[in-house]
Length: 159
Image (tube, rainbow, N blue to C red; front, side):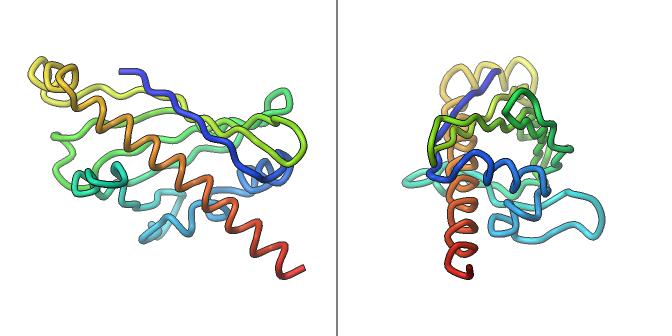
């Protein structure tokens, strides 16, 4: 299943780009519950916000190298459940930033997942579990945007 979402962030694209190029520690630390001993694998709690937050799950996130591309930056990422992984989909996608103008940037996430459990999982996904996946991706993107904005506010206050 394909998933796409986007949000706007009130931070100039150059600043967001610097955060993303600097590496995941610059923008995921506030989201991470624990960092792996080596590499860029992080453990996060992911799931929809609001009334369905009980559907959240601990995930391991692997972040690839940021790739600058025509004024944008693309960061590959993959995540998977840390417990009972056969029951949860693996997500692979990209975070992308694009300058909107002035102090506004668009953060997008594009990716795909395959429902677990074969044909049964695909039926459940069509029946409604895809909404949980979409809400989880939306929550991750919103949390990421808030993390970058908070980091930038802290940096400005310290200057």
